Image 1 (cartoon, rainbow, N blue to C red):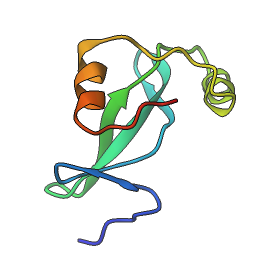
Image 2 (tube, helix red, strand yellow; image 1 turned 90 degrees about the horizontal axis):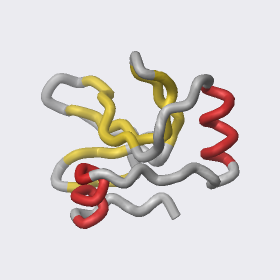
Image 3 (spheres, rainbow, N blue to C red; image 1 turned 120 degrees about the vertical axis):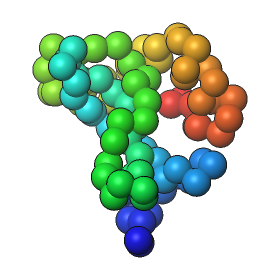
Length: 88
């Protein structure tokens, strides 16, 4: 399967990962990344690098302005040590 390198420009350990984007979960909107899982042929969440926002627009403003606070957690620390670029 061909990977869209414009949508998933990062490759870490065989995972094709997006740049930062606004994403949504049941808990709200957040800034994170998705990845393409070639085994199942689907785009899935990869990281949550911010806290939650009430609206998509609020999260997008924080992303566009590069003003969001990076979430301090073990999974982000591990990802940054293993090749995921820091947001700033």
